[in-house]
Image (cartoon, rainbow, N blue to C red):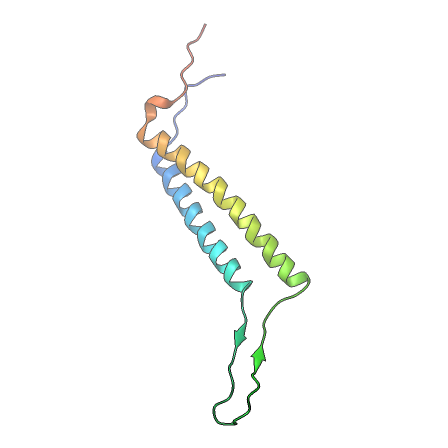
Length: 103
């Protein structure tokens, strides 16, 4: 295995940082879409003591699909953080590159 290659640490760092940001945004959006419901209290004008209750819970397939997508985004985020760490090491600690002498 030849170790005479160069990795552009700047490009890798930027790409990894964008990946982390996108996965954070995706996780946030997917988490928000799984919790959409609203409650309304008693109507002050009507004098009725009951309450209105509007739910946007997505029971069934749709909710399961959103949950699975959220978990997938978390996995991607973990992977992106690992790549970001590797990019940081490559960019700022180039001496950590594995060096193997030819025998």
